[in-house]
Length: 375
Ligand code: ADP
Ligand code: MG
Image 1 (cartoon, rainbow, N blue to C red):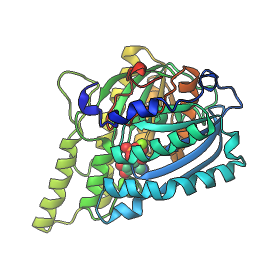
Image 2: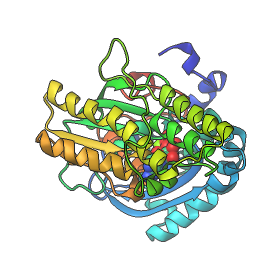
Image 3: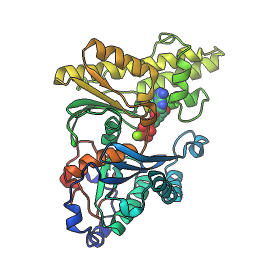
Image 4: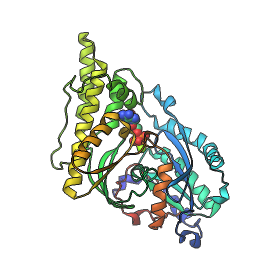
């Protein structure tokens, strides 16, 4: 972990450290009845959920800021933080009400502490600290990428590690070996842009606004996958690493050149070609990782995993390779707090509990050292 990851409130850590949750509370382990209040604010969705026993979602509320950021063509961090502040308290009240519980029923508070927009993360983190402290219950730090994977535990009863995890979203695209609920090993990731970034910038250049993945997905159903030849990058050094910046640039150049020359763009064809280029970059690597590292299950998550072409290619190629495939329903692909509540159960079980000195991190690998942040 480099110092640059620490956008710190370090000088206040000592003051906070004296505001500790009672040790007897911290030493408790969760059970099937344990109720976790989960908070997510890493990007442009404020989300609050109440999850029981790691898999029963009692409520899951999402306040999306997408409309607000749309006019800028992407997320504006300062606006995101301010909006989180405005809605987090009200959304928590709604989540508790819809779960049919009161604050006193909460056994632990979970929060996304990394990775994400630092200002946005700090809003959820400080709010979660306040509730945990006032209720004298454990504060559970949850890594956003691990939580995406955990969205599968909410719907696939009996699913357990070990498996290969694939997370593809607006900010991340990576492959992980998941050996236990809190044992992760990154085996490949994008060296530059995430897959969702290529979708979003392509949609923006075509005038479809932000975020654009689902629009291009819908359009692709009327297009031909080989309407446009788009690059599938290979990265030197690690066969599981990926790159999407070349694809993004190729799409933007293609759109600009066509406009300048007055050539009409086959939009469904371009959308289908983009979906297949992303799929061709991700799916064979995920399948090869399962084979090489000897895992029989592949567990997929993240906003881009809603893509219909990616899903059908995953299904086709894993069936051929005799790998069991797990994907979340579309409603759990993007950011939500139910997945935070699910992963929190396993973090809590492993003793990964934080004190009031917990900080937020803009970047932090999913296989971070727990000692680094745990009590
Ligand atoms: P992050 O956590 O990185 O903010 P999310 O998990 O919320 O990202 O996913 C958002 C991303 O998913 C956006 O880039 C969006 O365009 C993309 N996305 C959503 N639905 C689809 C889809 N059907 N096809 C492709 N991309 C999609
Ligand atoms: Mg996400």
